[in-house]
Length: 222
Length: 247
Image (cartoon, each protein chain N blue to C red):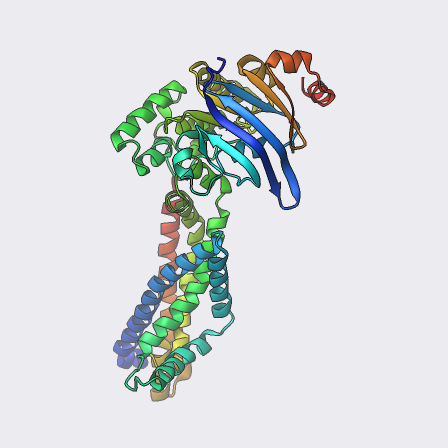
């Protein structure tokens, strides 16, 4: 095990960096997607409700691995078929799109549930003072919803971090993919996967400890 | 404080359905400037719904509501602008829990630019003094008692400088010992000539402060008159029956 670490530490750390990069990019896009579709789903516009529901149901109903294959292989093939023969998606691009869409759908549900957990009277009080629906959402409802959303968001972030491993199937050089290489080179699967597993565990533990602290800080003064 | 004649609110043939349930069947009503109108009646009689129709928190099914001559049921009316002029106080206070008392009060006027930040703060402190809570400006709603919350809610509504105040069972969620402090603030307001429509079960308040009492049941206005006419000389059997249970 020490030998593996001595030989491969640089490669493994780099892979961890790629994992975190993919995760971070996806979380940023997923937060935006989640906010947009979540707000669509709580409004009273039927067309927007419909779009939001279809998106959430469609993405949640497809395994991430299938979505990743679809975007990495399917979309470029379709676009090439339209005459853009040079069109390619890198594994990072396809991976970010797939993971953002996937995480975004779950975030949309978290946003919807968070907003609906805020008492209706809060919006009514805002409206009765002359605020528009948008201002009521932005200034009154969403700030309160975020507090209740934080534990679920942290949970979703951790799931997404772990889901990056699925994108090893499209050849993205993240930690699990590099773990396969290490195993293949050393013929020591037990040690190789133990090291990879511990690396995930350490990062996720740090992430959840930091998140807990943020959560406590946000809830102060409530 | 009887009204001085100018009509502030005019409701004509108002109907409101929730699905197949008819909550308001045919309501016509006028409130003049400076008048204090108290709505009483059993639960489910439509009092709160009527009040909530006045500032369009509930969309009406049919009929017309004019506030200061402006048809609030008309789609082309800028309802947000009209609402700036109609303060509302809710049964459950509905203070913004994530904001301090001061920010609860200054949020709307600052966002809507009816007051600058400094003006809003100054006005808020004056109003808090008026409702006896000057020392609570920096407190959060969770640190206040029910009575204090409701007084802040009244002050928050007054911060917009409304012509009309609507009260939706403002004391129903309060512990009995806190009812008095809220009613006292409302009495002050009435004395200062505010046009008020109040849904309440506080018969004592209605007797003392109301210019007109309206008894509602089953989505209709059954009887209306001065407090003396309603509480001492009611004509309708349903009014008499209701009052015999609450007086």
